[in-house]
Amino acid sequence: MAEVVIVPDRVTAGGLVADEIAALLRRRPDAVLGLATGSTPLPVYQALRARLEGVDTSQVRGFALDEYIGIDPAHPESYSSVIAREVVEPLGLDPALIRTPPADDPDIATAGERYDDAIRAAGGVDIQILGIGTDGHIGFNEPGSSFASRTRVKTLTRQTREDNARFFDSIDEVPRHCLTQGLGTILEARHLVLLAFGEGKAAAIAGAVEGPVTAMVPGTAIQLHPHVTVIVDEAAASKLRLDQYYRDTFDNKPAWQGI
Image 1: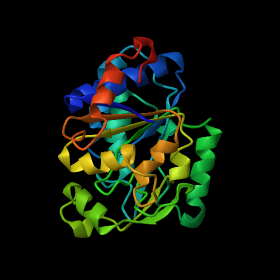
Image 2: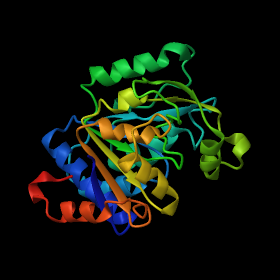
Image 3: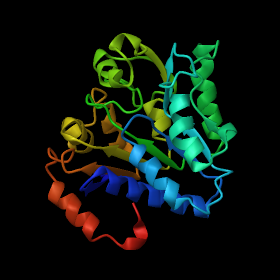
Image 4: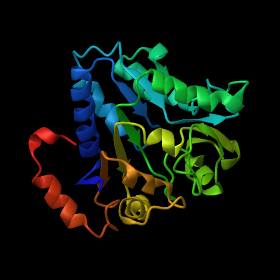
C-alpha cells in the first residue's frame, strides 16, 4: 500500500518533499531526480530553493517525464523551457545534466528507447515526482496504457488537452502528441512521490490509491511499486475511504523514516 499523507495545503506538501530531496542530495550529491512539470510540483521546487542553500548541486542529474511533440523547444510552454525556468535556474543545476525526452529528434521512432537507455546509464531515478490527471493519467500515459510501457510517442486525449489549455492561448495550440516515459519506466524509479491538490483530483486519487489496478486508470500502477508516497491536500483526499487510517499512520510513524 502507498503511504498517503494528507496535508492542509500545497506549501506544506512542497516542504515535505523538498526535505526528502534535500536530505538525498546531502547524502548523494550526484543523485538522479525524476522531474514533473505543470502546476502541481511547483511548491516542491519553490521550497527546495531555501533548503538547498549551501548544498552543492553541480552534480545533480535529472530526467523529465515527458515533452510535447511539434512544439519549438524554446517555446515557453515546452517542458524543456519549464524545467529550465522552474528547476534548473533557481536551484543552480547544471543544464547539461538535466534532460527532457528528445521530442524534436528526427528519429522519433527510437528516441524513447534511447531516453530509457540514458536513465539506466545514470543508475536509475532516485526520487520520481509525479502529478496525476483528472482521468488518472501519470506522465502522459493516457487511460489504456500498458503497465509495461516504455518511453514512447503517445496521442493526448481531448480531456488532457483541455486540462492543459490553460497554459496556452487556446486548446488549438496544445500539441496532440508527446514523448512520455512509460509506466514501466516510471515504476523503475526507487521512490515515487505523487502529489495532488484540489477537489478536481479527488476521484483520480481515490482510484489510484484504493481502486482496482487497471490500465483504464494508469495511476493505479503505483500500487505495484514498493516505495510510494502520495501527498494530497484535504480536497484531493475527500474521496478516500481510509483517510483516517492514513492520518493515524503518518502521525505515529518514526521520524527517522521520512516519507
